[in-house]
Image 1 (cartoon, protein in one colour):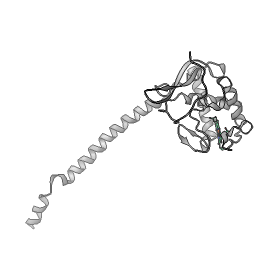
Image 2 (cartoon, rainbow, N blue to C red; image 1 turned 135 degrees about the horizontal axis):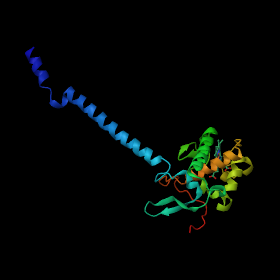
Image 3 (tube, rainbow, N blue to C red; image 1 turned 120 degrees about the vertical axis):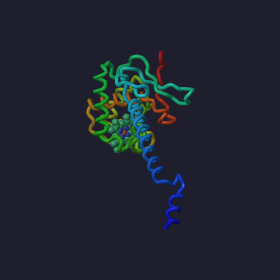
Length: 207
Ligand code: HEC
């Protein structure tokens, strides 16, 4: 009996149950703090009006791409005034329009075929930089071509040699304008070079 008790007492310090209980409590506590910090940092980074995600009123400006030699890929740049549909909006109006576009994109389930910021399906082109897509031929025609395409995709199909066509999703003109605003705003988001290898529409010189 005495021998058995002796054996239990000889348990090495690192095998003590109380030590591991303390470790578990400390690791959990430290990780809670770290995750809280990361959550606040992420929210700060993805909030419109920040460094990487510009304010909604950016749709009043020219949006273009520029090669960043240091980072090794094209990054979005914001130029001078170039209001969407020729109409400058206040921050609140721009937010309302972009939000309507985002809600329409969700309601019509565009992600069923497209990816947005890399999320969604791979049937149709990624829409992250759709605003800068060469398919719109020239900056001067882009807005009207986008509106026409969204309201009648089969009638304006390009298919890019894939044979795939976007169906008519009963998008009204008002909804199309909001979607275009949403796409223009999304193109300004600094996505660390995503989508890779994207070639933007030929751009007028930024002066
Ligand atoms: C059933 C699949 C499908 C759905 C759903 C769909 N699309 Fe498409 N979309 C396509 C295909 C396929 C193409 C490429 C063919 C083409 O351009 O004619 C395309 C092309 C586009 C383009 C042109 C892309 C570019 O970069 O030039 C835009 C913009 C677009 N879709 C927006 C939308 C929006 C916004 C929605 C939701 C309201 C949507 N699509 C829903 C299949 C779909």
